[in-house]
Length: 80
Image (cartoon, rainbow, N blue to C red):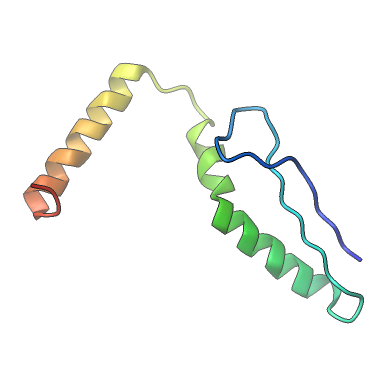
């Protein structure tokens, strides 16, 4: 029975593990467990959090990035 576990958190903190549990029966095998694991990783957006904290981003750079994104959204008509 494959089982993958770490600790779960709704608000991930860098360095704090995130829980993902995959519990399968003997009849399904490792391939099915791996697919379930990958689906749960996508649902919890674990990889986005890993990429987000991969490099340090200065607060001013983050603000400029958000500002330019909102400007682009307004230009496309998604925001008013």
